[in-house]
Image 1 (cartoon, one colour):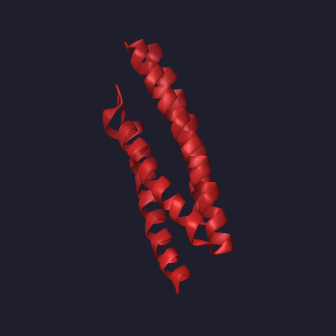
Image 2: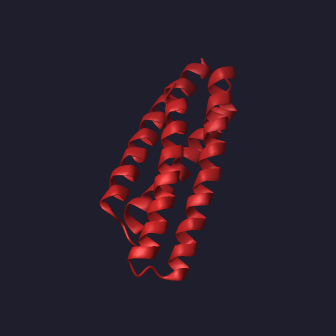
Length: 123
């Protein structure tokens, strides 16, 4: 259930962040190199999240440890991307803070439940 919620939230996160990057490039003086970097990182994050959610769902449904552990490792990688958009992006708006912080909370909940599931699958 949490993977489903995370998939829905990340879709919203991706669209809103992409639209905010477009907004920031039109309204503010946004360096072209940083614009390309932020868009590329957003798309890399999207690919990572899709793979992470697929492996997490597959591992959870089949009660297999390897896909779930891989999803847990990708959760850590996705958290670094979230930190980038939370703190290190060229221009950080208040909406960026709220969206990225919410995504980090969701990642934390998922990581905790993945650890619990992995411990249960080991028995």
